[in-house]
Image 1 (cartoon, helix red, strand yellow):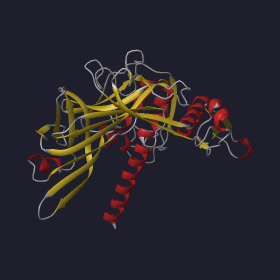
Image 2 (cartoon, one colour):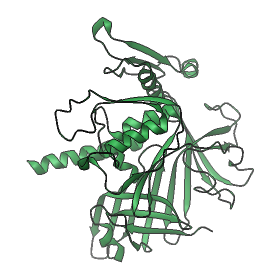
Image 3 (cartoon, one colour):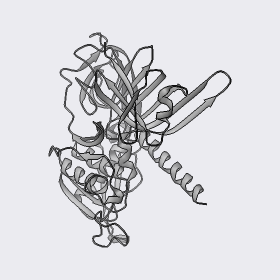
Image 4 (cartoon, one colour):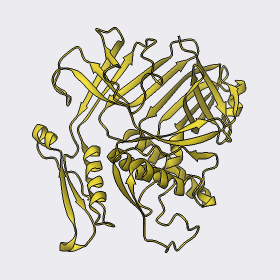
Length: 386
């Protein structure tokens, strides 16, 4: 049986106290995106006052291995004559990537930012992504934009060739997501010691050794969800205007055959004529609009099949469904795909569970939460200034 530990950390990432009297906690990690978490405990708990400090957060350990870390973004204190409860909701440490816009001239510290029109980088995916994170958030950023306590892991030099053109066109997180998808690499921000580390990695195809099925006795339940595409035919508008504008088209042939033609809104890349950037935009739009298929499973963990040790986010695993229903993976009922999400559910005295989700490469739900969180903060700041 695994031993789970939950700790509160302060804004300097120092571990302050173990949280051993919580009621329940849920911690969700998402491949190449921001995860979410929630925690409920008695507000009179010794850890509650530490948790409520701005910048504080949590670290979840399994058998002394850090499995999750993040900061709180919202809290509720509920009191009545019988109880006092503190509920916290937060984001995983990838949230820091959403806190920066990509600068066209990251070496400049003030307007008019005229040194260069855009920050163009191309090459191996891990190298390009690491470079953008470095100059917009990491140690290579100007002092005002540098994230204290964040370092960059050594570049593993992996992934396909990608090209980026940064010009205030998105958050850093949104900017590197299509680069990672196109380059077939994963990224994450993890706590190591008393700091954060940005890492690039490649998932491993473990489907030959990590298999889940009722027959094997390691699958308690599964839930397959499938949705119609939002767009399987994409128009990308690049540079130029009027009749001279560059327009390229991209299609998902299999999805067209299955669902007929579904045209998505124009993908706008008006600042470039570079074919690599245009292709990346088309492929990313196809991924965003693609048919979504996901399988949430409740595995029965065995010593040789433990999440975080034998498989993790970005790895491919295999699942055998009982019924050979038609899915995007065929009609055999076997699914081989990437682990894109995993939720750790903890209760003080009850079972500790890990629920992986395997499926297609669309971002969306978590990113919408991040955007809503950012917009709420902007509205709050506007109210405070008025």
